[in-house]
Amino acid sequence: MADPVADPDRPMLELKGVRSRYGRIEVLHGIDLTVNRGELVALVGANGAGKTTLLRTISGVQPLTGGSITLDGEDLGTRRPEARVVAGVLQVPEGRQVFAPMTIEDNLAMGAFTRPAHEIRRGLDEIWALFPVLHEKRGLAAGNLSGGQQQMVALGRALMGRPKLLLLDEPSMGLAPLVVEEIFRVVERLKASGMTILLVEQNAGAALALADRGYVLETGTVVLTGTGRELLGDDEVRRAYLGM
Image 1 (tube, helix red, strand yellow):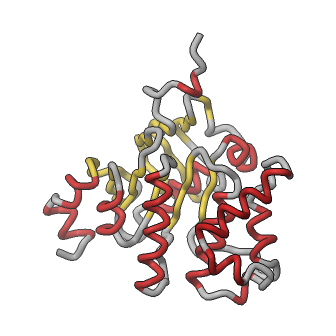
Image 2 (cartoon, rainbow, N blue to C red):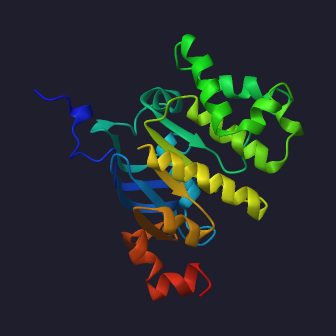
Image 3 (cartoon, rainbow, N blue to C red):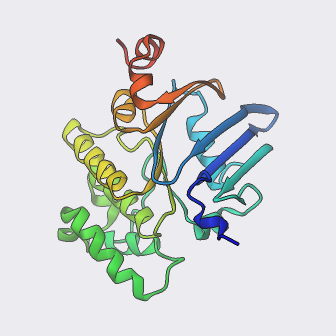
């Protein structure tokens, strides 16, 4: 029998009827979504649409109150957050959330806590190649870095865990335009390498231009879906989310 994990026809990530609530208030209302192996899928929508809540529900930080989440055909929704990390779901959180007093190098090593010790050095070398400025400053406390460099640390920390599925939550938020360009170049390189990525991004135009497919969320519900190019060309999306 073929290994179900290696089945190329099965979505890497599949959400069916996903619901989540904060107390009595339901914020996700039956989300259906798939991410295929090697795809970059963008989630766009206005503030408060439920994008970050959806990522947090996938990673297990936010409780799943209805529906199912599967990774490579295996149930994910009932697993604890740390078990989802072991399964290969790594999230770069909104606001970066680096360990401020710790050095850059120690922050990155923390991302590899599920990996064998001998892989840490190889992982660090890969991050230094991706972000040379972090190598130059590797002994500095992460809290002393600029916002853009902290975003590099947060992204590098997730990559150290060898993600099967990378969840990116607003990677460009609060960053200078030149830094945003650099972050998106890195995301594009990761996509080109075959990494599977689910991206939440306030810059809908940049996200959809890079995405294979996209979903538009509105008040916890998927209202539109299509290829990145289709959504970029949709007058409703351009008017509501791209300011055009």
